[in-house]
Each structure stands twice: as C-alpha cells, then as structure tokens.
Image (cartoon, rainbow, N blue to C red; front, side, top):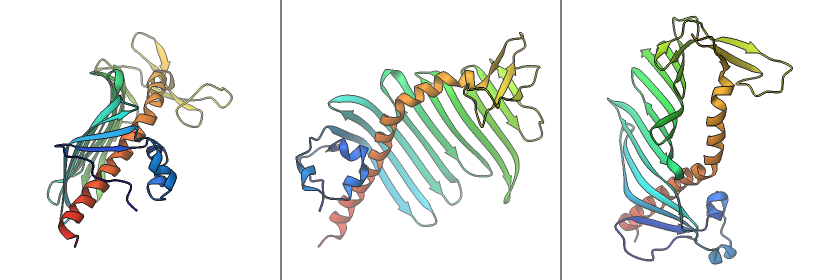
Length: 250
C-alpha cells in the first residue's frame, strides 16, 4: 500500500505528508487506515535532484530542498555527494535554519582525507571540528585534529606532544593542559576530564566553558535537523520508485 500519490504537475518535487511520519518513521512502513485522515502539515520542496549510480563504486548525487511545517519555513538543505574510482569520495552538505543558523558537513577521501562539522551563525563561526588524515598505502602517517570555538583554535597533531592553542590565529605560548575533577558537578568534556587553556594575557578558561553556548544552540536545532535529514530519505525513495515505475512497470 503506497502512502504517496501524484496530485499535480510541477518543475519541483513537492511532497506533502503528515509530520507524524517524520517524527516516527515506522509509520511509513506500517500502514494504518487512520493515517489517511492525518493532516499533511509537513512539506518537502525539492528544487534540484540528481542521482546517478555507476559501476566500481561510482555515483553522483545532488539535492536542494526547502522544508515547511504548519506553513512555516523551518529551513533548507543543499547536499552534494560524489564518488569516483580514481578521485575517491566527496561529500558536502549545508543545512540552513531560521534566524541565520546553519550546519555544514564536509568529507573528502584520498591520500589526504579531511572531514569537518561546523555550526555557523550567518558567517560567524560558533563551533567546528575538523580531522585531517594523511595516508601512505594502508598506513596513516599523519593525523591532525582541530577544534575551533569562535576565534579560538585548539590543535593536536602527530609529532607535536602538546595541545596547541591559537587565539585569532596567534599561537599561545602556554600549552593547554588536561584537568580532572572527580568530585565536581560542573560539565566536562569527557568523564570529568577537561582542557584548561591559559592565554598569553594570563586569562584562563576551560574548553567546556567555551563550547557551552554552541552546545546549547545545537540542542535547539536537533528536531529540525532530524526532520530535514530524514526527508532526504523520503525524496530518494519517491524518486527511485518513480524511476522504476516509469521504466520497468508493465
């Protein structure tokens, strides 16, 4: 039993559905007659869609879509994913939310692999994690991890014993140090361990303090991000179903 039916013509792929099915995806697979009377209060408007799958792990994917809930915009996304036997894999996505917030994820594979996650407020960086791996054959010979919080960059690299801290791009002379608080109730980074930073002007802070506001912002985006990410699967499902119905149906 199909939940979706074509209701009109458009240059876009527009999907109207109950938000309940976004919140509980199992209802897409377990048909219930009561769902036929649910209000279509969630809309996916895909203005650009492309999917090509070839041999030897080759594919080319693109999705640009906007989303509304109860007639209110909740954001949009732009996703590009490419794979080639010679060039490796590339993935880039950007999820835009209301009030200027956005999340970007980028991944590139190859002899030098990079992956990053960033939270932005318009063009202002709130939080970014980035990992760089340099490989030779099957062996990783260099690794670098970068945590950026506003204008503070914290780096840990192969061959460098200490954690490096940069403020506005300037390396701070005092290395960051790991601190452990087994008794305190304050938030920490991992198992009551934190990273204490001393800037050149003598100011001290902890990574948990710096990262706190960005974590609170991320919490407000979880629901919308989940909806948009799952909506991608629905668009893929409908697009593939339409393709096979057009080309292989009797």
